[in-house]
Image 1 (cartoon, rainbow, N blue to C red):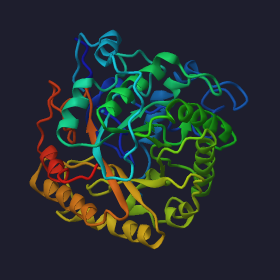
Image 2 (cartoon, rainbow, N blue to C red):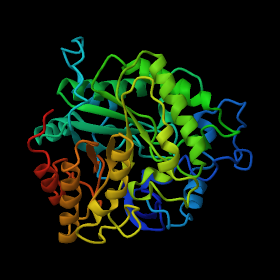
Image 3 (cartoon, rainbow, N blue to C red):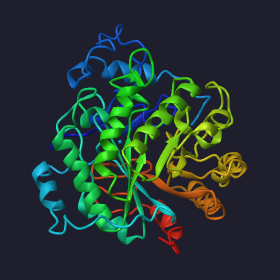
Image 4 (tube, helix red, strand yellow):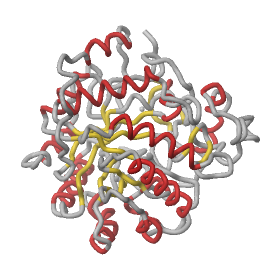
Amino acid sequence: MVDFMTEIDMPHRSPRTHLQARVPRLAVGAIALACAGFLSACGLPAASEPLDAASSQEYGEEAAANHDEQGTDEGDENSTDDDYTQDDEDDDYTDDDSDDEPPVAVNTGQLRGVNLAGADFGYDTLPGEFGTHYTYPTPEEVDFFAATGMTVFRLPFLWERLQLTAYDDFDENEAQRIDDFVGYATDAGISVILDPHNSARYYGSIIGSDDLDVAVFTDFWTRLATRHQDNGRVIFGIMNEPYGMETELWLEDANAAIAAIRQTGATNLVLVPGNDYTGAHAWNADWYGTPNAQVMVDVVDPGNNMAYEVHQYLDQDSSGTSPECVSTTVGSERLIEFTDWLHDNDARAFLAEFASGDNATCLTALDDMLGYIDDNTDVWMGWSYWAAGPWWGDDIFEIESNDGLPVDPQLGVLQDHLEGLDG
């Protein structure tokens, strides 16, 4: 049996503070971190050269180490199955009804569920080997969480695995894995958020910078939207946690991606994050540049079907790296200013990442935050907890046990807020 667990210095959640965290060894590092804007210094090809999988191998560990040195004032992955193979997954997802018409969209209802992580593992091994360096959620997980009453799954994956080279066709094996998961989940009536978990980077280069033309990003989203536009239960989360860039640049990137999506004819819901890890508590802050509150109000969606994506953790620096919570009311308190901004701007939002330790203070804080969202469903579309997935070990936040059956107390709190959903 491969030992996927080790004690390492792993930058996982914003702002990726120094932390000795028990996480998957094969998920160490981040492809998208230290080399942004400095490709030549990192020994990577210039923007005019195709970016491919081989180019990423030299900088994964250094990127993670450098990113881990960031300050923390801004705030804001595994047990294994030796017999788990791609063929096993493909067989599990086989569905005789795969040619049926896609289900009707229900994006106007409350979307409440969980991140099913695994396809985003192995940041420092690109493209990596499926079943060794990364995996995808299983049908059993879909069935279990659907039975709890959840209505949405967020699927983190890595852009570089789906599109090995800029402007090139998608890798068909990887695209099919996403298709299989999406088909199984949406056939069960669950919406799926497609989440390129890349921090506004592709092979380490910031989107829209001198090293990576925004056209690479729009090409990616044109291809992905075209592939899924006929399934109304698919939601396009255009990017996970942009950081280390001007907010104005991220707005340009986001608007370009939205325009590309709409040009395909896709009418799907689009989720748009802010800068600096898109922390709700920091929406009005200026330590990362111009506040999201000032810039992101200018998001343009020709399809008029978008919501802002924010993340919010409950520990001291909002990083999601500690099982301890500041207080029993920290969750609602950190959402208040952002919620006021939503009301003031006639906008709506989705809480795409949040988590809680299993101690009494945190469980109460989790309940408090979700209760606050319950009271403000005029602007809050819902939430997805971080996290579950087939390769989680004894993580501080996971709601999945080593044998694949969720048993953690956080799930009980989530279930209390799944009752009475209108679909």
